[in-house]
Amino acid sequence: MTERAQLLPGTLDLLILKAVSLGPLHGYGVLLRIGQISGQALLIEQGALYPALFRLVRQGLLRASWGTSDNNRRAKFYELTTAGRKRLREETAGWNRLAAAIAAALAADPEEA
Amino acid sequence: MKLFHRADVDNEMEQELRSHIEHRADDLERSGLSRAEAERRARIECGGRERFKEECREARGRLFGARMATLALGVLGAIGAMLSVTGIFGMAAYSVSKRLKELGIRIALGARRKEVLAAALGRALRLLALGSAAGLILGVLATCVLASIVYQATPRDPLVMMGAVLVMLALGLLATWVPAQRALSADPLMLLREE
Image 1 (cartoon, rainbow over the protein chains, first blue to last red):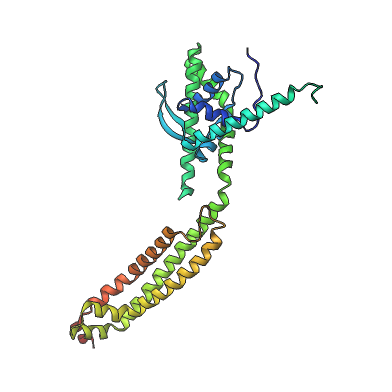
Image 2 (image 1 turned 120 degrees about the vertical axis):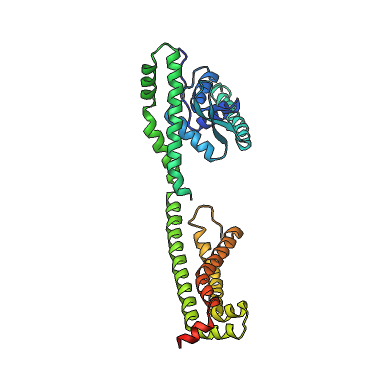
């Protein structure tokens, strides 16, 4: 079993945008996709997912439409809007800067300080 | 109106959750559970559904005050419109009935429809125009205040202004329609016989 990582506040939206950017998904599909692309290290709670999706649609970052899933069931599919794509790029860049900065800070040797 | 939107949103959320549970149950079923057991498990996992709905409601709740204000103002506006229609109707009907004889004589003397209407409703229409102008100016002032309350309202929205003017015109026409018909159908012979 892979070790679970704790989700930082604010990162759920970014993960959802990323998951959806790989192709339109329904809510359950977003959960699976995030689990899959994070090597099962990140498991999103369903109770947090839908409010986040709702919020992202309201912000105009995602577009939702009803369709039929692979299982032949009705499902609400989400896809990125242009604004969503832009936000994903910005947030990804921001996250990479933050991660690099924190990694650099944590790797500092006593001599350099 | 966005207010009636709420039931739709709740309904859609319910459907989306049902879809989620079905998909989860499909996966569980594929892992070897019976359909009934898979659905039961999927539902239990979704125990947070009420919480989910609550959180979504909360997100919408931030607009609640503005929505209520809009509704209250809408009701007040509707009452105002009703009052103005009855008022205009009453005044126009009164002025027509008071001058019915005069109008009959004018028709007998060969007045055209336009002239009869001007004589019967001229005053009503003048008052209507005056009131509308005053209302429009006050309305623009009031929107400045409203813009701070109502969601996404701007003080000078041309569409809203046009709408207000058109609605006022429509209400005025509606209210003067019946009296105008009566004025036009004034029959000089009948009126003379009544003497």
